[in-house]
Image 1 (cartoon, rainbow, N blue to C red):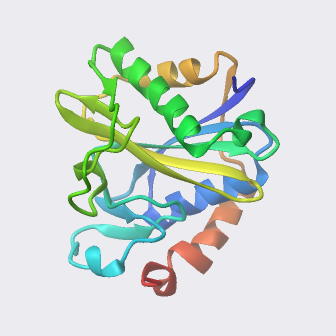
Image 2 (image 1 turned 180 degrees about the vertical axis):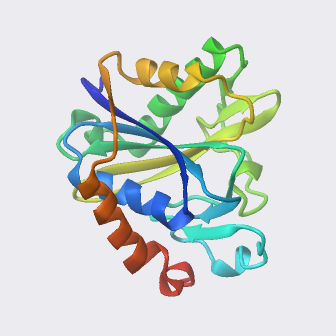
Length: 218
C-alpha cells in the first residue's frame, strides 16, 4: 500500500518543542511515506491544536507543548511516540481520515500481537469523559488488557498528512519498531535526520512550538 517507507529511529531524547518541529520539517519535504519513532528529554505533555491551555497549565512538572495535530492531552516519558507522514502526492493521502487512522492502528495491533502483547481495535467510540486522550476511546484505537494503549491524531496540509501517535506501554520489545515498519511496508529503509532537517526544525521550534504565543493560543 505504501510502496516505500523511510524509517527514522530517532530515539535520542529531545525537547518537546523540537520533537514537534522535526515532524513538521519532515512533512514539508517528504517525497515518500515516513515513520519516525522518538523520545522525550524529560516527562512531557502534548495537547492538541484546538485544546485549551487552561486544561494543562497545572502540569508544572512536565514540559508542555501544543501539537499542530488535533486530539486530546497525552503524557509522554514512558511511552513510545511515533509519527507517520503521507505526502500529498501519495495515493493513500486520498483516503479518508478514518481509513488512514485504521490502517496505521491495524499495523500497531498486529505488531503488538507479534510481540506477545494481546491487542485489538475498538469497534465503537465510547462517550468522551475528559480532555485526556487515553481516557477516551474512539473507533480504531488500540486496546490491550482492557485499556486503551494507542491513540493518535492527524491533520492535513498541502504538503501531506501528519499522523502523531503514542503507544502507552513501558516494556515494548526492541523488535516492535522493526515489526511495525515491516507491517506498514515490507519495503522500508532506515534513515537519519539530515543536518538540513535538524537546522530547519530548530528554526521551527524557536519560531513556533517553543513560544508562549503558540502554547497559549487558545
